[in-house]
Amino acid sequence: MNFINTDTSLFGTGAWRKGNGVITPASGKPNVLLCYPKTGMDFGSTIAPPHSLLTIAAPILEAGYSVAILDQRDKPITRDVLNNLISSDLICVGISTMTGTQIRNALGIINIVRELTDGSVPLVWGGPHPSVAPIETIEDENVDIVVIGEGEVPFLNLVKTLDAKTSLHDVPGIMFQDGSEIIKNDEPPLMDVEELLPVPWELINVERYVHRDMYLRDKTRVLDLGQTSRGCPFNCGFCSSASIRQRKWRDMSVDKALDMIERDVHRFNLDGIWLRDDEFYIKRKRAHAIFEGVVERDLNIGFYTSGTRADVLNKAKPDELKLMRRAGAHTLKIGAESGSQRILDLMQKGTTVEQTIEANLKCKEYGFNPAYALMIGYPTETFEEMDQTIDLAFRLRKDYSKAQTETIAQYTAMPGTPDFHMAIMHGLKPPKNLREWADWLFDDYDFEGRRSPWFTKRERIYMGNISYSSILSNAFENVSGTKGNWLTRPIRKAGASLVGRFYRWKLKNKIYRFAPELGLVRYLRQIMFYGKGANPFTTWAKYIGIHLDADEQRQGIQAKGWSR
Image 1: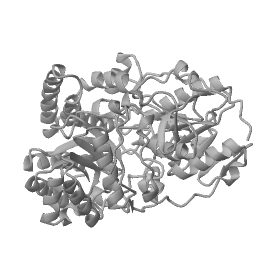
Image 2 (image 1 turned 180 degrees about the vertical axis):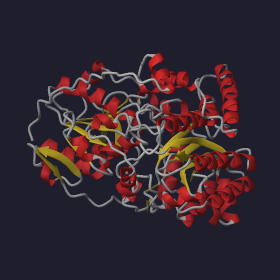
Image 3 (image 1 turned 90 degrees about the horizontal axis):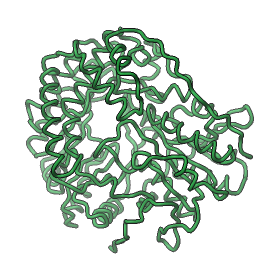
């Protein structure tokens, strides 16, 4: 096949347009402006390309419109930056957001856009959170339209409709307000993944997303290429995939997946890739064929994937696993979730603790590096069961020295998940509006009991200590090794290694009930990742249980409206 050797020095600057099959800089300002806010977890190799925007930009470009993407994790999205991209040619501004901190940052961006456009340009919200909580989203004064679910087809139809100034009632997959009435149009069928267009890499500065990876440590040019399949047929109680993608797994053909991988590996001179499929290995014959193609095309890469189930891995035959390894499979991210079988059953995981232990030994036998996701704090969960989860993490590491635990996250009920209503039955009072959802964080302390009301304040602090200690014991060291140059990287990693050893010792011995130093860690993290500059005494005081009242002032911009 022919490879594009485009000069990447211009990538990610201004608006782009597609003509005669080639994406080139547009002469004017964009017809569509897409923004990706900071997530609160933006450090080193955790910063992946904004695929949620790239995938919806591709059909917009194909239809002849010019598009610009702004990624706040790459560069600040300031008033001047936005003003330079706004003109009378602007049809709409789109923003993608997950639940939590990204909403707060999105509102900051959208406030500026609303002011600059005087309310004349529609503000379109999409992504995981608006898809599962569309009503709370559309009710916000800085939201005009919500795209629900996968956005490639609905957003393209929406742009065409706004451009032609025809009725929004005819656009499937969106929600909007008509006067005081909220209108939700019918949902379109899920798209055929085979019809996905190539990633329009020109819209971003690709080099900003090529990393020395936290998993593929012997690789220096690793890039997240996106998905070769979508969806998950399982029904885990904590996951919103079932709601957004209807528990349907859809795959790209083997040839198309291989062409995508080969094209981008050569185009960007990569030695490692990440495939973010929810369940890459679920159809083992397809995965096997892709591995054969990677070997036959002599790509010589390392790779890892997002979704691996222990029970699926355990069914793989020796020849499949050997080919996987030969193709470059390095890290398998496995959702172990809990060391308590009762909790696994409660969350409808469909796996057992023994299957996770078996999968770990299989990884050891064939040379894969497993990275496990764990969580604590499910309704009715006891601290004895949480200790079982900690014990499982260290059992896996004892059985196989290369096994990693990413974090032990705190269960946070999310709208659109199967167990959301169970959490409400146990006292959860979910946020009532978009701005309240901005503080819905799965990896921070829950001092007020908003996210885990079934535990006492003291118990919630213990859980926060476990979560923070797990980050410092493993993930912090891994990510630190991806930052800096040849001189500073070893120093960073050496310091992080000392921190990691200390917190592994504390966790292993269940010393999580007294950890006053984590108040300072939390304060520093608030500044670095969440953009909050709270008084350090306030942070520490909350940690030790002193109640301090704070009056949070919010400033909203009254939308002046745009003609429908």
